[in-house]
Image (cartoon, rainbow, N blue to C red; front, side, top):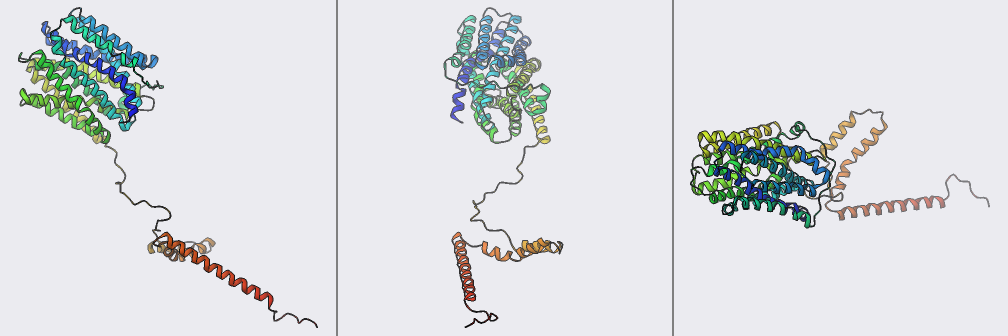
Length: 490
């Protein structure tokens, strides 16, 4: 990846890392603290969905703020709102208040994601877009791993101190963008993109972002409850398993992003869907505990968390000129819609079947739906194929190229001339050229340039000798008396 792209994206990615650590802590901290307070799983699912509802609302309006004040000031404002909401959550645990605060955090964070994604998409060309977005996701999920590992630390803190730590990280995330040298992208004239137009441009990208929201929201919001079902795991152990899920997503981001840069992204999405179905099925049976569970959680995170960057890269490849900001806004909105719908819907089978079986079955159904859609789109619009396979050829120049003219071509030319009109004067000239063509072919088929030059010199020499002989004959004719000339008088 070019060095200037890394330098250009350093400041926003460092800020995202700090904010991501705090948000990851908050994502698992909220359901665990509400569960400890005796709040029902249905209410926890609704509060978790409030975060994604805020994502959807923010995706509708945050682009206007970004286009008006620029990337850096917009990021500072959104991060400040996250810090304020985290501090307010430490004042109590009323479900209605937490619903509103989680919605506020979601509204702010989608603004942060819009700033970062539009920044990176504006800086990258399609050849490295998948890798740059993979780096963005690596930073985001790497911060998520650290945030999950810090859950054990928050268990030793008071409720107020845990949320104060989240607010401190959110406030500190502004510093890299303010202090580090950076070049923010220019705000280009944005082209409005309605949701229906976005769907017409890239149905695969839109559905991929929707499916990513469905799957990732279940993993973030309800997987901690499924892992803690039965009380066999402590808060620290649940955090470690969640960190393993996010670690899988982080470590597989760049390989899958690089793979999507060199292959058809639709094919990559199909394979990721198959992987989600398989890993979810394993969680329902053979991989419910032990090393098998840890391995499947790692791979599930790798498959689920790479859906979004591959889908966004696929959509960006088809975005109209000047529409990247609005495209990012639309895809974030669609992702937020999926994230809002899945936690309340999946909490119902979890209550009926048990936490882990219900969640795993829901993930398998989602993966199956993705697989059917992506295969259908691949059939409807196959990947473009080259017109002819690429073949290597030895380099040729006009001096070293043999004329590919043979007897067949000469015969075809003569036949064409016989069909022409006999009274056309150009026909006779062309027929003379065709008659001389075998000799021209022989002359042009010499083995080397030196032989051609020798032949040309010999032809020039013969022509000069002929001219000299002709000049001598003319001179003799002028000196000798003509037979019919009168005799000179004495």
